[in-house]
Image (cartoon, rainbow, N blue to C red; front, side, top):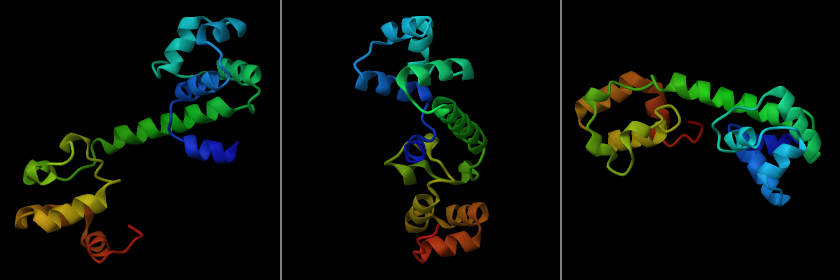
Length: 155
């Protein structure tokens, strides 16, 4: 279970449930009724519109022969990922100092400034002007910039 959970970390448990049901060729509606749950509830969970709760997770795990805690562990990892995403939404350089055209090949609004720092730094230092380079140095710090630009793979 641990290796599979490592792979699935951050994925909504409903998407995993849907995959497990498809693997077993079980319809969502029939499965829902078999565990005394409303089909709409299972449908909403498998679409990622509703979270898994402990009681339901235990019934699903028992019915599918999965380890106890499997779906709640996935739910917790998903919630952690979503919380980090909310926090990281406010983590960005002063974007008024950066030209969007530098990132022509990606959606500027979707740049994850923490996760894609190597890409951002390399792009700015390859094509950016002095003000853009200064902003990126201010944002990431000179040490991180030096590590990235000198091809240190640990960044």
